[in-house]
Image 1 (cartoon, rainbow, N blue to C red):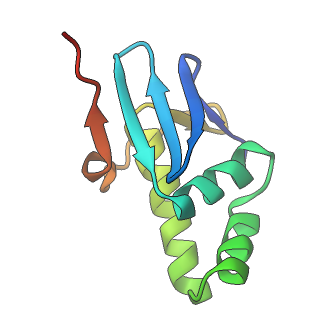
Image 2: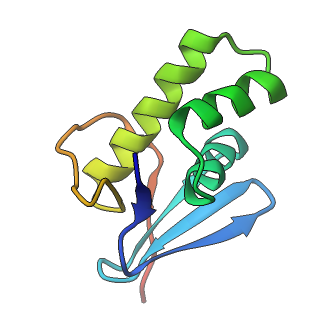
Length: 106
């Protein structure tokens, strides 16, 4: 699986994880440290299996839960139009809206 952020989406590390800025829609999302680690692994060319392995090594989480969390994060990022897998956006809709925070504009 090839995973990448869509053009116009930028990352910034924060004290609490990652922020994703979607310049095209003037919005940003925040990811907690766990999700940031998964995203970092995928953006560095790792596979979802690599991200699962990282989660189970760094946190007290079982493989099935880690696998489910990685898949859900990837699906959520793709469904929000922030990322693409294998060059295609997915249509899955999960819980990204819970993490979404719109940028306040004057």
